[in-house]
Length: 102
Picture 1: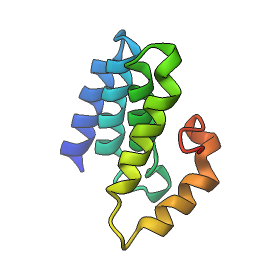
Picture 2: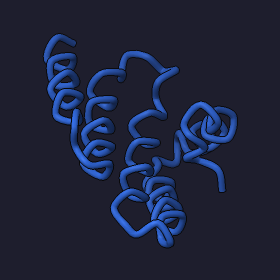
Picture 3: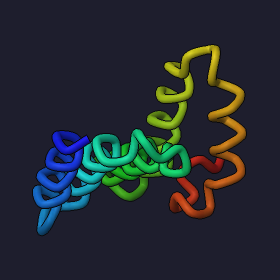
Picture 4: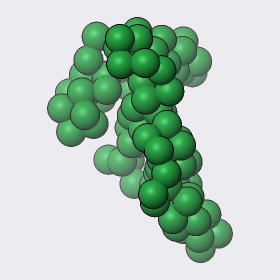
């Protein structure tokens, strides 16, 4: 856990002052490293990755890029947890910047 926390701190520090695409990608990595022991934080890394995808393109294309990233993530969910994750996304999208809204 100590190694994971140090990695998360480094990723979060790297995010400071960066443009949104890089910032959100770094925060996604930091979130993934920091919270595997806390089930309630499971959606953070995915939500930051969706935000990063939207921030990498022109504003007119952002919604499409976010949707594509969200669908890519969902397509790669293991069957054993797919229904659980999709339900969690629906219930908690509002606290994740609505990243999981379809």
